[in-house]
Image: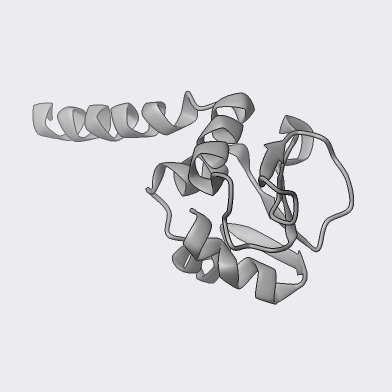
Length: 118
């Protein structure tokens, strides 16, 4: 019984670390990863529904990341929890897509470039 409780406690600790990342923290992490020149050469939106959006403008010089909702070349519908896992490196973009952790709308070629950003 003690062993099962310890395992559940460890999972809770790991999940808690990801769950504590809010939209602003995700945006800052994306900004750091994107840098001045991501090579994305497109606009991409992470749409977290009621939690908000994070938009990468890979055409701007330097590239920008903000939370202003607007039309983009590609939109990724994702939960804030999964976005946090993506930017923290706990969720691989290809694996996340295959597992249905997010849905891609628009230019799939832009989504394919995401791997080089996150």
